[in-house]
Amino acid sequence: KEVEISIPAGVDDNETLRVRGEGSPGPEGASPGDLMVYLRVMPHPRFTRSGHNVHLDVSINLVQAILGATVRIPTLDEGDLQLRVRPGTQPEEQQVIKRKGIPILGARSVRSRGHMYIRFKVSTPVGLTERQRELLEEFQEIEEEGDRR
Image 1 (cartoon, rainbow, N blue to C red):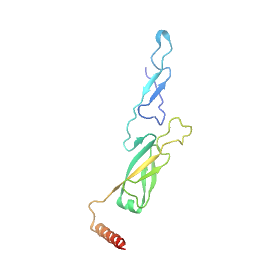
Image 2: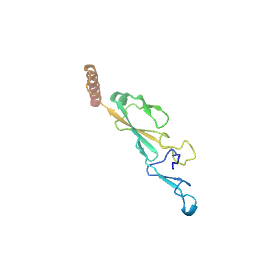
Image 3: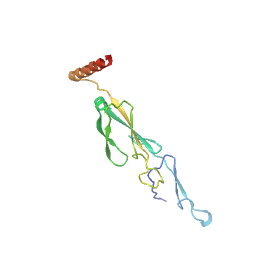
Image 4: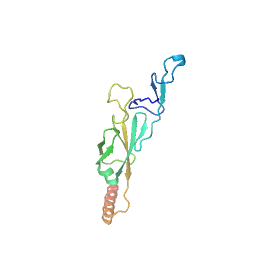
């Protein structure tokens, strides 16, 4: 027989749900037992999970890392979010967005969630134009002058 079950938000891999009275019938007309449902949570294509927290890698370019920027990032259930990248962001630097992770199963408040950890992947440009190369060389000269002082 088919049984419809509701899977609550926040369940984790290898958890078990008990559906009372939907198992095999008991001997000699006794009440049916409970149906035990073992859960396998499929991996998400963009997020990785660590308990109630989620991790997301976000690519930014070198200029965004140096000067700062606003980037659009996906969330689990609220569409996209605008995130401010701080000036001087380093490769692999992380930013935490509180309460944007996995709901905490059985919590009293709907605001009880894990956090989202954003890790910035800084990409360096390839195939520079002549003007871009000139500007970067000028920047390097200014940096070297500052180091000598």
